[in-house]
Image (cartoon, rainbow, N blue to C red; front, side, top):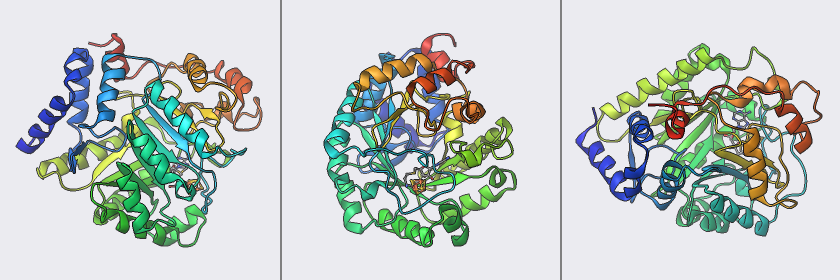
Length: 407
Ligand SMILES: C[S@@+](CC[C@H](N)C(=O)[O-])C[C@H]1O[C@@H](n2cnc3c(N)ncnc32)[C@H](O)[C@@H]1O
Ligand code: SF4
């Protein structure tokens, strides 16, 4: 049962998005049920469900409703852009490890952002490398935030109170600081950087003092942590930090060291984490005052029962060198924004990515790592040859309802 405050929040969401009344009833019912699984939080004038959707009362969410829920337009709703590939840390699992090239300059990044907006993107993640190393990050954020909800992923290294305030003033809605373990030595080891833990803690403390910014921690979980219960301890620790959200993902097999059946999660592991999330979020909602930390597990969003895998259809990644990939975790490129119009690249990618009800890389990493198609990231001809071997499964519940097959 929703508290009176939550019902009021939901009414505000509908009032801010009258187009929601034109969404197909089956999809509208899905969205209502989906939203019920999370507490809704207020940040200034923003109401936030979680950091993977735009604030529910803002212009970006209105565009999401209009383009994707009502208009059912093809093209991405979500994108990530690499602002630099330079990084002080050297994580064992980093999905950018094998990427290299000539970095995009600021003019190119701004053009890419405009093209993404025109393609229908409503949610934009800034990633890297360490995006704070891009000296124009505040201007780039201001440019993108006028039409899109912008979230920043950061190690926290180098963040100052002034930078945080400038980013908030530029319109940034959410920040995820990476923190993989409650033990300093374990986090530093996974990031192969002494001081990683202290930098993350300092950044969280700075960000929590900035009014209006939604603060999350991004934690990458090993399969072992999910199975041996360490994830519960991690969640208690993250909650003690006073952050708004724990953004959880299992380690994805994007790089060779993780192409190992023993390291990749199973559907049972995914479901176990979804249950943990549901239990936790229900208890936070039960407190009735929109307090407490939300858990937002990527595997919940991309599961069969929710939105499914959006790689290449509703999600796109433009790395710091301008290479276009279906999502951050997929080491294959459909071309470079300097050489081909982004709209053309997106259209071609969509032909190869119809969407399905489970994570593409978790299911298909063996194929990409078979060595048959060349060095990673695969280039366009290699990517297409590899994708020709992929059998896509059924659609997610959301897509079935939106596209008409579901009730
Ligand atoms: C590539 S990093 C860029 C931002 C910044 N350098 C950082 O680490 O926070 C973005 C996020 O992706 C996560 N990440 C990187 N490789 C991953 C993988 N193979 N599986 C799951 N998450 C991954 C990182 O932990 C981080 O939270
Ligand atoms: S800190 Fe981020 S970009 Fe740097 S190596 Fe780790 S995951 Fe990759």
